[in-house]
Length: 437
Ligand SMILES: Cc1cc2nc3c(=O)[nH]c(=O)nc-3n(C[C@H](O)[C@H](O)[C@H](O)COP(=O)(O)OP(=O)(O)OC[C@H]3O[C@@H](n4cnc5c(N)ncnc54)[C@H](O)[C@@H]3O)c2cc1C
Image 1 (cartoon, rainbow, N blue to C red):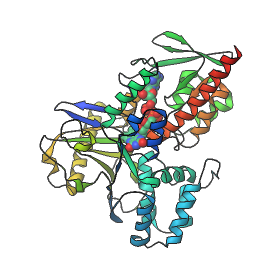
Image 2 (cartoon, rainbow, N blue to C red):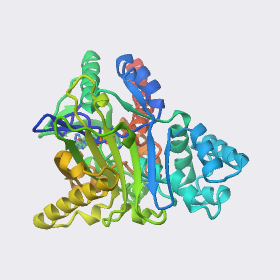
Image 3 (cartoon, rainbow, N blue to C red):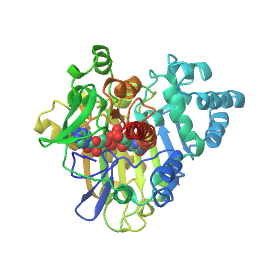
Image 4 (cartoon, rainbow, N blue to C red):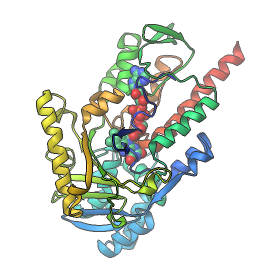
């Protein structure tokens, strides 16, 4: 396993700051399915530390509410607070849950909502805003991507890993080593060598490592167009890859409280806030921020460590708003991001500014820098990326791609489950080749 960074985890990461502060980057929530996937493919030890976040809040000009974010509670809200007929709500949930990969891919999420909740922008906002936050999907994306991801969450609610990302990744590393994986950090793969239509070697720091199969977890476009190179591939396939749109990026503001300062549990676990009067994707991504999702980390997030509280504010963002700023403007924009976020939080927790010990921001450039995802993409690619990722072994024998792709295979759960599918294919290839030797 070759990792270009000095740390394992990729976007599933954390960082330390003076004063004993630990910040998680992408530990905000995933569906219940993670428990099963971790138990089967990692260890019981990891699976047993996954716990539910029960207090999910929303506040925007259209509604304010608290929910456990599952089908039962959403049915309650949609029927009693939003006045939707129970039969319509039921049919919507069943339709969303019944969607699968082989369904009609032309229907968009907007069309799905128009069918069930015409003219109800508030309902669309409740159903869509958290999913846009979770994987960058929009009303224009195929409805199946929404249906699958939304139903995964509605199954039982939102979960996180108790112990923090640092604990999770260290247990994963232990499991890898126990299984004989040779892990090398600071080893970026520069090229993938192809011979006679098959993978021959990967190259890192000028050294060739011969192999019969490669799984790349790097950005799909980078893997295909830069590591392998268009000249080794069919023209059609290259065209398809070039047409793959990346998902959006994110900004975050990390805030740690001074020792002894606390946040009341009534603040919730995940808090979706917006000052925009309506739900629009362009507003969610705009540098002129209206939407912020706050994750509150209480001492229970890391029960074995110090009694510390932290808050991380996340907002979907465009690469283009950050990419070309000179250093001075970039620093000023980051500072503004931090200040305006604390102002926004003050509205909900008066006096929080004085309780904060440390606050700093990450931008699309930060995510690009640490993971090499093109344009700092937080959630892989749009839907069309999945077909390109799946078709890679037909282009180059022994060459596979996993990691966030196609919206469905995104986030911690999507990435794990896609990794399982791809690993099985690699296993099949290697086993069948060994039998023929
Ligand atoms: C701000 C933010 C918040 C998020 N919140 C959540 C959340 O709450 N819940 C959730 O489920 N998901 C969340 N996600 C998404 C989730 O983190 C990712 O979908 C998941 O980590 C899978 O990422 P990946 O496999 O696509 O890429 P990565 O995790 O980035 O993995 C790619 C790995 O490949 C390495 N690499 C790249 N190029 C090379 C190379 N040439 N050679 C060697 N190594 C290379 C990278 O360093 C990295 O380790 C969030 C993401 C972001 C950015």
